[in-house]
Length: 93
Image 1 (tube, rainbow, N blue to C red):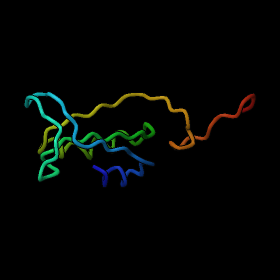
Image 2 (image 1 turned 180 degrees about the vertical axis):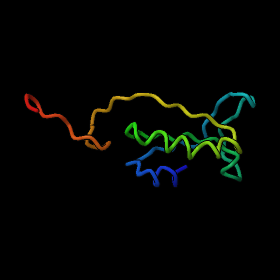
Image 3 (image 1 turned 45 degrees about the horizontal axis):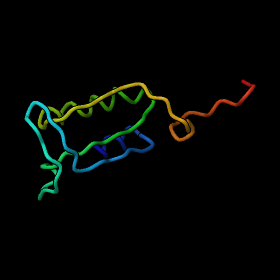
């Protein structure tokens, strides 16, 4: 996943490890396992709209082999300069 985000030049991401949850496969408890593939992780990134489809396309093969979910939504950020946009100047163009 992180390689894919690097390939599309996402400016950053956050990984939260050992996540608990419940889904189609039942409940999963957060605890350290012997294998990274056994624990749940949440990865969040904010990218411009044009980078969403390449990420979705890159994740399709992963979700064919592993369980998981993905959420795509519009967001507003307080520091636009960190996400590839130039902040608007007050009172001007």
